[in-house]
Length: 330
Image 1: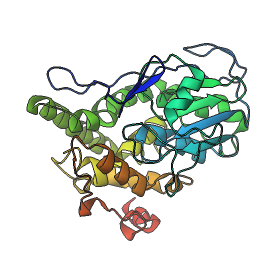
Image 2: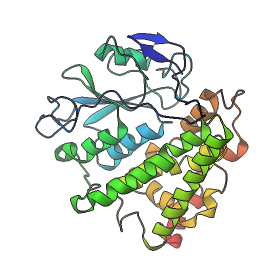
Image 3: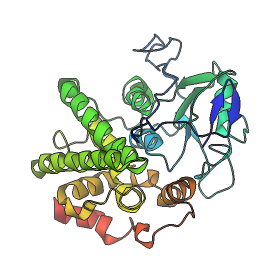
């Protein structure tokens, strides 16, 4: 996957691996906030008031970072307030593309062929990665934010007044615990699977994969006495964890060599994943076809022939992941 250099698309991969073989993720570039009254948020500039129909979300159904925003949009009842465009699951020499594929859509705002054209519409000389999710403001004609962790906080906060099924995922009295869990989950799991899969030395790989499973051990113990990470209802870290765990059996275990143990070896984590899958509004946000097609077809450096392992074809509609199994497990 390439990148933009001074507003021009370059089919040269962004270098995110250090000399010692460790994968280091680039930060997000657009960091404005939607707020209830349009005042400036923690970063960026003001002028983005929470209003139904004003914002558009660009997503990949394969991308775990975009998946977080789709979960919030669905669970909180924001589908009518925030519309979406969905890219093709395989991003190759031109990056994310709007092309014919089941459940993909055209660029509903501009008819762009490539997502990088949306980026340069807002920032003609932008240099950097072109990623999803991307939150666009139709009123001012620019990008609000492309950092998933901040977009979900906006959806769970500023968008409360226009949500039709709002739920509290960021209780103020648990904010310190939430931030600590988010840090562990991001560092060791959300990004840890990429640090494992994209490592280019054995030392870097082993450090990342052992850190990943150490975090699994911590969360498995925590979930032994709790339905969710902080009690009997999900909060923000649960959803940030879910977007990685739902991809673990079909992708990360095989494709990224995260295979010290399987999800079946973590009954509490698996139950937690199944519980969240069956939370109202979540199941429709999971598209394993897009997920498997993207990872196995787009990452040709680690899977040069684009082969999809037969074991990666998980049946989320089967009894193993159903509500009935969930009720027996809890």
